[in-house]
Amino acid sequence: MPQFTVNRRSVLLAGLGAAGAGLLAACSDSPASPPLVDPSGSPVARAEAARGGTGRERPVTITATADTVDLGGGTTARTWTFGALPGTPVRTTAGDTLVATLNNHLPDPTSLHWHGLALRNDMDGVPPVTMRPVAPGGSFTYRFVTDRPGTYWFHPHVGVQLDRGLYAPLIVEDPKEPLGYDEEWVVVLDDWLDGVTGSPDQAFAELRKGMGGGGSGSHDMGGHDMGGHSMPGSGSGSGKGNSNGGGAGPFMLMGATSALLGGDAGDVRYPHHLVNGRIADDPEVYRSAPGRRVRLRIVNAGADTAYRLALGGHRLTVTHTDGYPVRHEEVDALLVGMGERYDVLVTLQDGVFPLTALAEGKDAAGRALVRTGAGEAPAAAFRPAELDGRILAATDLRAAEEAGLPKRTPDRTHRIELTGGMAEYDWALNGRPFDMADPSARPFLVGGGERVRLEFVNRTDMWHPMHLHGHTFQVGDDGPRKDTVIVLPGRTVVCEFEADNPGQWMTHCHNAYHGEAGMMGLLAYRA
Ligand code: C2O
Ligand code: CU
Image (cartoon, rainbow, N blue to C red):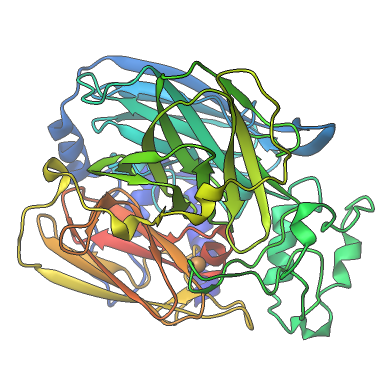
């Protein structure tokens, strides 16, 4: 029966447009689930019309392609990119319609997902739920109103492609920007293995064998054309803590621990940590002048690494997370989970300063440099004291007044248990690994207009950055509005959102490997 479902689905999908994919999902095979809002149905069109917008179009072309990237310091890697690493930021002004044509020059199908945007469901870029995958050689034009200012980003929603170089910032500017600043810098953090120790697909294949690996974990890697890559682990990352038990192939990381993350910090060993596509030895240099006020837009595009970010010699004023304003907080360092964004303001001192992204629990770091005057750059291994100062996580923030949701009794509560573990690599929600071939089998149902309460209950002994598409929730009673929230092991995070964007939306762990293993679910509006 499941096999039949898969085949029938793919046959139908092959012949249908995006509308067909939605229609198909609407007539779910599962007799238990009621009809769902079609991703390209009239409620979706109505919600888009209600966004209004200026009518001004912002056309961009994004080409996904196999590429060799220069990570700096003579390190190059074969990978897939949007033509640069990170991809060139896309900017719109709130109210503009983004018209983004994706050309797929990759050997595999792909898509673009616009992370954090409350956009129309059929533009959300999740095959097969909201669209057909874009085949090799094919194109797709995304068209939607970007009505909320903020710092967002985009990446494919196919397999673990996000752990290649396929990511770029999306900045929606506020035509009435309330903050005053002289410059704006985008800071994209990423954990990197592609084309260095292997590929994300190989990493996933190794991980999913589990910690025991059935004793064969390391052996079948030789079958792939990895071209005799050397093992990672040279350099600053290998000092302590990462010595592993388990001991399968080159990708699984054991023993990475972080008190901030409540224990196990990550599953995957990365030879490099990048800030704006460059390694710490040969970093990007931001040049400015003392006294200038800068807005940093920080994006964690990593797949398996939280970063602790600090700028040596400076404090950071946090103004936004995940695009939404918060009550400003002055901190020394920020903990940024995969998929999360922070905007901060900083007033620059005179000299040369490291902007260090510590790979939390992994004993390694990426960095950029800020130069406003004369002086020697600190060594790549230098760790600014701010990393151990006041460290802020999103749960320490409160929503700005205009960003909080009005108090309302929830109409519906979904308790979502995060389950599974490293031993079997069986990450799941409520004990059921998600099946992308039958996505609407067991949706978390919501009704349009409802106030929905989500309880993310972490039953695992690892942290998970939980993400919801198409909405932002408010964390706790007066916490920040976010689309991605860290849930520590053994803890519960409660959040609420307004079900005001009809369609079918993924909710998942933004650890790319956990999500792909099955820590994913579909939150769907009843028709
Ligand atoms: Cu950043 Cu489901 O994605
Ligand atoms: Cu996870």
